[in-house]
Image (cartoon, rainbow, N blue to C red; front, side, top):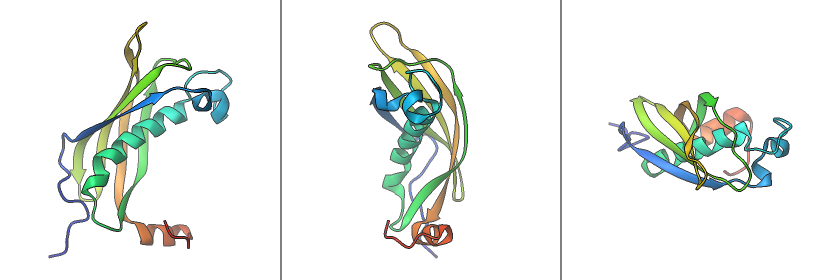
Length: 140
């Protein structure tokens, strides 16, 4: 029997990642808007980072995950200087497909609250085969 590419991944596993928002994280910096607040693409990337932190310790050598679907509602603006915590929780494991709930919370003295929430799907892939399919010859 072949070794599974992802041992120990079970629903309920979660990880959190904090971000102190800087000018480099804003919609202006990401060219995704014209206001100096946390950019939606940066917030989604933070949630993806949390999902990677969930799965990476469980992947067999030569395996990685790639995002295939993101459904995300950005619910509130976040100012530079604020701290945001993103969390990803593994909800479902279906073969190579991993489904997460993702959320981001503002953490401040002035106010706390939900900044964004959604779902994220990642798929376990063989890294070398994936890079070959993309036409990448470099070492990852």
